[in-house]
Length: 112
Image (cartoon, rainbow, N blue to C red):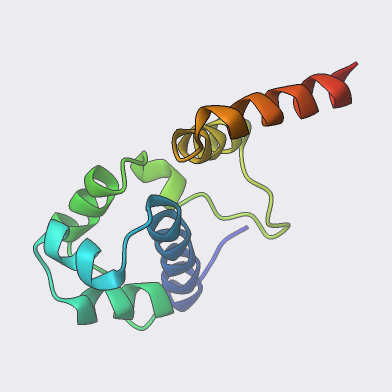
């Protein structure tokens, strides 16, 4: 599907917000790490504005997410297999050992 510029900005902003939240960062923390204002991050996330190329590459670096994932727009809300694995790994990193073991048991149970 071909998107117009306002749709791209909105969808891109949703991805930035998703990965920022996944990283546990506030808009202010992300802006500090990217060397931009919190207004830039807010405007990006709401689709009001689009970041400069410098901030764009810094977002990818700080959020530790491939730039392509920030532009992975799908009308169904589906994400690629790689994006699912990436997100799962980020979530696993936040869990303690007990929770990881519980999750492993649950995964084993649903794959049997």
